[in-house]
Amino acid sequence: MRIGIVCYPTFGGSGVLATELGKALADKDHQVHFITYQQPVRLNVFNANIFYHEVRVPTYPLFDYPPYETALASTMVDVVANNGLDLLHVHYAIPHASAAYMAKKILEKQGKRIPVITTLHGTDITLVGKDKTYAPVVTFSINESDAITAVSGNLKDETYRFFAIEKEIEVIHNFVDVSRFQKKPIDAFRKVIAPEGECILLHASNFRSVKRVQDAVRIFAAINKQIPSKMLFVGDGPERPGAESLCRELGICNDLRFVGKQEQMEEIMAISDLFVLPSAYESFGLAALEAMAASIPVISTNAGGLPEVNIQGITGYLSDVGDIAGMTANALSILTDPDKLKQFKENALHQAQQFDIHNIVPKYEELYNRFL
Ligand code: GMT
Image (tube, rainbow, N blue to C red; front, side):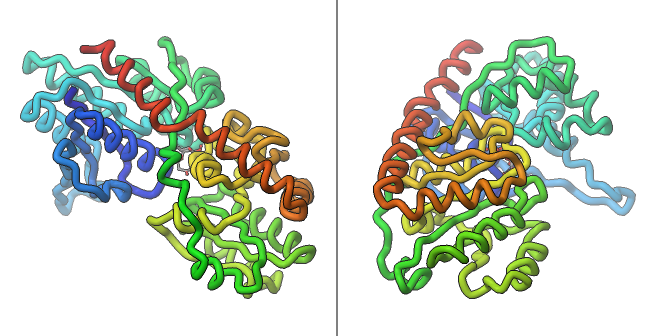
């Protein structure tokens, strides 16, 4: 099959998922064409079946806001027509679904029918999409998609709750390549972070307010009072300065490191003992799934689709949003009991295997096949 994938090229979960999907499809001999404004961060391999088409947005003094959506739609038309694509799979509704609709209509005029599949990822529905500035276009373009998928049952329900969707939304959960995260810890690396054998906690996100990064800092401060421990914060974003100030205020800077955006998450995860995700909402929580694939138990909230990924008392614990005391107690109950930690690690890996790339990618292929 010849598949066009439209996504954000950044570290955000939707771009990561879309890129990993494209790579997996290319490994299965499909031809994959990425259409986006920058080389996706996870597109770091050479594969003869993968093509990358950059969307260029020419500027002009009149444009206070360069028309990305128009440039994207035109690029889609060009790539579909010149590479004989069989379908377009767009990740994140805004503005990809409406640009795809425009491309589809232009191609129809040229006598080419191109099916459009839209995958909803989370904030395109729950935060940005439902804003009334965007909602009519989001509703229309989702309804005009030939197929709609959501990355969790929760996101499917939320989409029906917020928008007048007339079509079936299929749930295809996010996936992870478990084998990639089964890395042996590098002892020297672990020693640098935790020289006295302290346990290592980890948080990774885009540091937006929905991630409640300060809760993660407070949880660590409370744990750090009880047991020798270190914590790594991976990623960057608007909440980072506030989180760093809070560390200084709490006097825990020596035990906590902000390491910025990282590509080799599997090396970091290999030395970590516990993943902390105190988000106000997650449609799914791909970062938590990647942690579980690295055999790390997860302390999270019970918001959104997280209970579909993290299983209470088995792979970690789930608490109400903002329940710092509860999340601290749960973390300590795992970290202070070696047998429990070992059992939860095994459980986390077992749960991640349900979402292994080999189980989920065929579901997308089945969906694509319906349109051929
Ligand atoms: O919140 C993020 O990490 C970014 C955002 C995105 O679209 O890039 O993530 C959303 O999509 C991910 C992949 O499907 C999900 O795992 C995240 O839970 C979801 N984020 C939210 O719902 C806040």
